[in-house]
Image (spheres, rainbow, N blue to C red):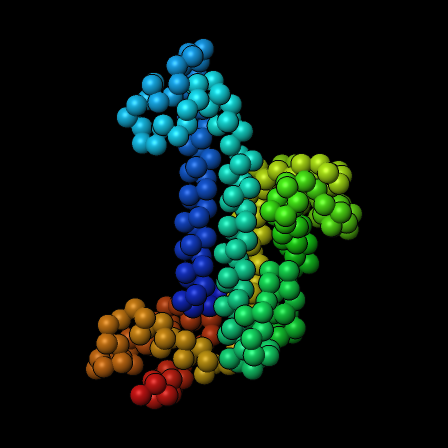
Length: 281
């Protein structure tokens, strides 16, 4: 799918903001771990415990280790933070896709409760069926692989499962090259029982592929949801951001301004907005 038009409806803006916030937090934690490891080199060789060396640091008593032991943990922080961060990024993506499916339900494009009963493993296919459009196949395979890797961490004690080996076996050389270009390494040689690790590269890949697929989902909604529903979303958006929005004398002007600013890809005109206001009053 190559449609680059994006409708900046409220849920999409929230997803993008939360994703960016999570990205900054994750990268900040990774950088902080490296900075802390570098700083602890200054106390290398000391047998004093961290609470003795840095008594003013909050919660330091919970890290009752020598500088050398703590530094060893921090040097390997990528895998620990990745194991926590990748599932979080996938959860944010799953929640956004539920919202997309809810909008398609309202549009009559899929059955009632489709969104409620959906899981990340099925959501992209449900959206494709509802809209008659297709996600980028390589991006779907990348996300599916990340999802199975997450399942190994959560359900398989961090070890490679047969499902992951089968998934990797379906990769093309193109998919492997694209993965390695972003993540820096390829998991294709993993065997059942090997450890599954999420490092900085896998986290960057997860954030990139979820952003790409969310943008594609947005474009698929654009062609599947009728203008009247988009206009209703403009009014919902305005009510959520403006106190007593529907009681203001300039309600139509404000709604039209919001539509131009965030919903320009839909092509709503003045009458679309006036009709939406009338439906709400």
